[in-house]
Amino acid sequence: MAADVGVPAADVVSSAWYCAAGTSNPEGAADETLVIASLARSAVEATVTVMPGGDTPPKQRTVRLAPGEQIEVPVSEILATAEPGVVVETAGGAAAVSHVLAHGEDVGIEACTRTAAPDWYFASGTTIEGSQQSLELFNPFGDDAIVDIGFVTDTGAQEPSGLQAVVVPRRSRITIPVQDSVLRQERVATHVHARSGRVVAEQTQVFDDVTVESEARDGIALSAGATSRATLWRVAAGSTRGSGHATLSLANFADTDVRVDVTTVVVGGPKLPPQTVRVPSQGVLAVDVTVRVPLESDFAVVADVLAVDGRRIPVVAELLANWSPASSSTGLAGTVGTTVSARRWVVPQPDVDADGVLTVFNPGPEPVTATLLPADLVDRRVGPTSEPELAIPPGAAKTFRLSQLSSRRVAAVVTGNEPIVVGVTTLGNAGAAISVGIPDLSYRG
Image (cartoon, rainbow, N blue to C red):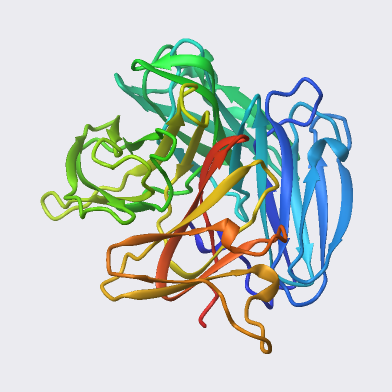
């Protein structure tokens, strides 16, 4: 995760956020709603531009947010279109943007990004019968982009001829149905490389009551891609509450096998030794990270590449979680891990019928104190201080519940006295979602 993916610095005059996935037409399978959260002490103006591509002109709406306010904007209220590429430009102070996709009785929640890049990676995917793995590519700029799309699967690398030199027209978004080009593969990881230009990439995985490895799956998972590979990944989200089950996909795009330590950190549970796994060259491996986790537990996951002959070969890590239709909650959820830690993280709160749990992981060697506040009360100079606090030992994780905040629907801000990693698990009647928080790398305390 690059620095410009996170919250812009407080003194930035303006910033742009890009949201690639979702639909906004009446027949769409993933109805998109934007969540725009102010983190500023002054009013913030946000201009939402929906780009449908082709000859149809973009449409805009400008909204004004009070200090610390959060608003939701259904994309369909601005423009109904099958392929909406969305840009949110904020001015007047720091803000954060995420979006919610609704499919059936499940939601996917993910932060939008502040970067466009020539390379994007995803580690988790499947094209088994009945599944829909869709790659959404958005080009918000004035020149066409040309991309090549390759995959590593159970059976090795694939570069379908129809997915080479794909044109992503200027100010347009296109959707690639992966299952049409990579047939019946249980595990599929993706690499998008732009020969020219830059794009924004997200991925959705949809199951409509499909059985995978004797497990029923139903819902939508939304993931923002990673712009590079890395040797250390962390996902501070996931839960076995409601009979949740999760696997960590590790994608190796190199020509050499890789050994990885996968550590599951259970909140309030025993310290588990790492699982050491081998990820084959040009291959992808799914690791069951909940097999040793007690029921009704939250957790974080760390994937650390081991050195071989003095080299550590970078990989990509993505968590996919599932709550079957037989569970108390039903849904699918996914997120690519993060490669950064920060002293402050922001999590917008979408208005969905579900409970949110923030997992706070301490990756460092010293104890950490983490505090939770609503965005409109962060860094206030006067008034009482009664924010919830957590004392987190080295290498451990603890949780906040979003219900600990006030009833106001504003962004949650978690601040540590040392670098931490924060993610959110959303679970309830609206389905399930997991996502990494939005780091504020400019915060120094």
